[in-house]
Length: 274
Ligand code: AMP
Picture 1 (cartoon, helix red, strand yellow):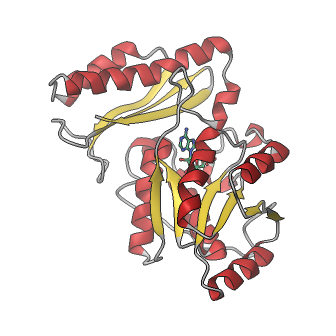
Picture 2: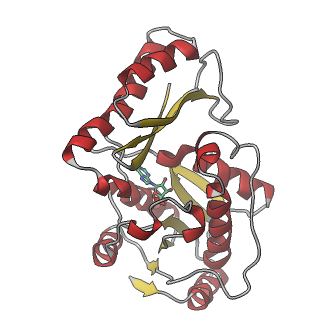
């Protein structure tokens, strides 16, 4: 596995691979890798001849009061995991934006609700950095986790709208054995807060079970979910159409429950298909 920090060096390598006709797979991350990230590498690996993983904690997708400064890091552990999962090239730029960088990519509509409403500017930061990473890596295929369900739909929209010609693949949400959705931010949780954090998955899985048992009213499902949450603050608990991400009143095939909540200063998200 090669590790490259310089964006131009990275692009020279991927340009050569493209000229040689090699299919490039890509998994962008912010590091502090866990099994959720590694599962995306495993999804990509059989579908590409060169697998690139990037690790970059992108400042522009963090709000002014968010956790950019304390975001957990483990460069050596990350590299070992990438090696184990067959990564060919690990891209670890110290910064990604050249002097004078002045371009932004905005996806509207899909970003107006859920995390977009609660984290102003977040998705602009995400789509802009992912667009730049796509330009550098020039992937044929990019894998994103369903853990960040709204992000996955926003990236799909961007790739379609800007005719980027990249196949965007969603990887399933990976959980710890106790059900907590894996996240780099789980490192912030004390044992007591982790216990309360488990209420997110309990809430949405109870909603799923109720939907399977025949409850079709989103309001009833949300009441049930709220009654189970043991958090400090709920950002949202919604039942949405899986493509438009618009809240719905009646559940149908494919509808999705999404939750975001704060536990002891840590923001957690989770989602499940109903
Ligand atoms: P992050 O490092 O948090 O920016 O995440 C990088 C990628 O890993 C994104 O596509 C996430 O959706 C994905 N990811 C993070 N956690 C999980 C998880 N528990 N299961 C599946 N994918 C995940």
